[in-house]
Length: 215
Picture (cartoon, rainbow, N blue to C red):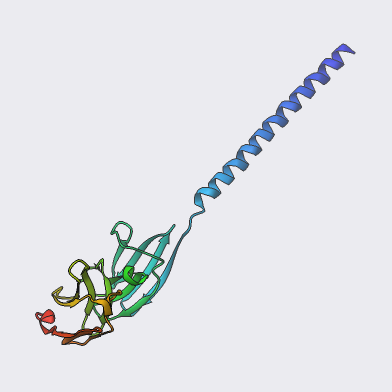
């Protein structure tokens, strides 16, 4: 009787230890599976925003860090907008494109609006101006932006610039009571050869032919 009882106790202890090992093993596998699932769950996705015969532009969102992936022919480049200190607020639309550049707004909020010019030609480079661009001529690659504001002396400086030559010309206006609110003008007209700005108290224009010289 004592021997049978001893055998039963041994069997009970043996099966109990095996069950404990099995349970421990199962729990470890479950924990590992959950941990692996968490590390692979990332918010990374990419959207195509422009495509032509030879140019493709994609925007990659990596947890609100934005990258522009540009493919021109067989050449591929990636621009990290965060590392380039470019303000971003879900950039996802090309405003215009030509054989030299594609324009994308990266941030919008009146004075804080910002654009980038993505090269659609291999020899061009990405252009970012930390300025509020007021007008663009996509045919001639000319832009107009507010370059500086000096409330102390009541002056605002507008600059017309060509994206290819990077030459520019300025037009200065007065900030007065009638036009003291940003962006300080009533109308702004940009043509291939001229920039004209009208305010409540002034009407000024300048020739911008020279900014395209050399093309």
